Image (cartoon, rainbow, N blue to C red; front, side, top):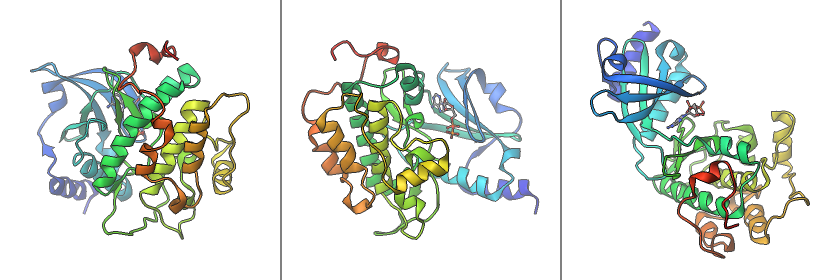
Length: 304
Ligand code: ADP
């Protein structure tokens, strides 16, 4: 069987809308490129009929010749289209033509938090509180559905035009099939990887998302992730040794330090749980706005 035949078979199982001819140019107008991923290009795509604009992740079928890549995409589609929450980039529509697969996603026109952090250097504590509380609700939702995202990081946290936080990229997400199941696939992004993922004998589960929540919190307040090193190997070594510190030059509140250090625990069972996170003083010492003004894309909020 040729790769393409096999691919069609899998697609039909997944019930992608199959179309003849070039649907993308017949029904949609392609706008600017929004970014490039591992094997996808993302463009603005306007529906010619209702003028609705989406972010279209376009994947060339020719790039899916490897079984593993195809399987990863299928799993991403299956999990992403099953989740519906205001903190998740909405999965709008899926179709394919002879050349490409098109995944239409909710457009997040204010980019991702990695770009924003690069522009700003670091965030104020109020901003970190506002983003982290939104991230908390998405993780809580996903874990209730027994889904572990496994790739929570600043560049997967998007902002829509109302500055609402949206978690995207379900390429590494997995479903916990039975209570106590430990996953063993080595995956993630070096700076954000939890120590138990690096030791495949241990297996990993929900707690890896909590770990990356802690990494995101640190990166927001300090400007760089805690274990950042010259290369991935050195980063892994620092993660395994739990070798990080809070620089003396930065003013970080005692509540923020306590939250982060209670999350960045090597032993997953010693890490804060989601309920303990939301009850932590970091989230309960002041009023936290639901969203931040657009101006914070470039400058800190004025009240802090
Ligand atoms: P990868 O999976 O390799 O991280 P993606 O294919 O998900 O990358 O996305 C590539 C880039 O496209 C992102 O870094 C981002 O800049 C842009 N992008 C992805 N999804 C959206 C979206 N829903 N709205 C706006 N831009 C997006």
